[in-house]
Amino acid sequence: MPIKKAIFPVAGLGTRFLPATKAQPKEMLPVVDKPLIQYAVEEAYAAGVREMIFVTGRHKRPIEDHFDMTYELEVALAQSNKQDLLDVVRSVKPDDMECIYVRQAQALGLGHAVLCGQKLVGNEPFAVLLADDLMVHSKPVLQQMVEQYDEWRASIIAVQEVAPEHTRRYGIVAGTEVNSRLMDVNRIVEKPAPEDAPSRLGVAGRYILTPGVFHEIASQPRGVGGEIQLTDGIASLLRREKVFAYRYEGRRYDCGSKEGFLEANVELALAHPQLGPGFREFLKGLNL
Image (cartoon, rainbow, N blue to C red; front, top):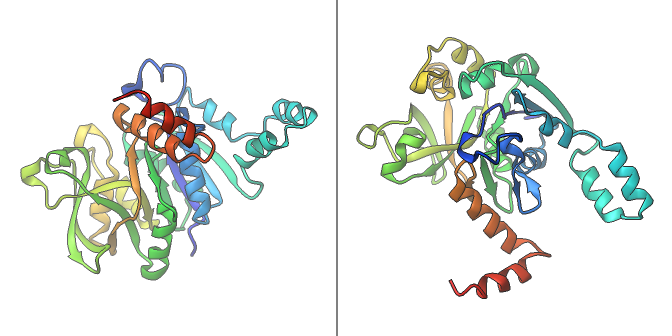
């Protein structure tokens, strides 16, 4: 079956960005001229996904509003003959894209957030995208992964090499090399200490998963941090199904950190066709 559904876990509190996230979701923080969640949704749409499932929490209404029709704004832009801006507003949610929202009542971890989307996904393979991880490449990362799924018909996890001292931040995978970009996973560990890490390949915020993972997540006790971990569910899935790790092509910005968020804004502003040239001159004038 093709990948037509994606889960976006967006119920987090965004405490690392306080006070900016006190009254707005961290996923709505703008990188240049688009909120983080829009980058993730556009990536999923480019990969063929048409059903976007947002696992939300309290105070996440701005995400729903962003992907809803804004009648008054569209009428005002039309009456002012601002067709370019009207096209931008309407492009946020294409006509053939469906947005569905489900609440995660308690913050019980990423695995639990994915489990909240089970009834909406049903018995289909699906994608999971973490908006904190902004991925940039001429071929969207999820599209690269869909192509791998079409070939192997098994769960695919995006990975990248991380510094040894950073293994505590990631799920770490190990396995057998299939080719230069693909690994047949035989082990995955959530946030191990450097001395316990089975490799330096850390899981990035993109997954394609088979529906069998739901049973495995539901069977898990609470793991690292007292949360229901998606990594533990995938580790259990390995006993029943193949899981592959894919070294994606592209640049990842960790926008869950202030440093990564600032890096994304600067580099994407420089690449912006209208803003880039002027912004580059501005930076040159700072004499850094």
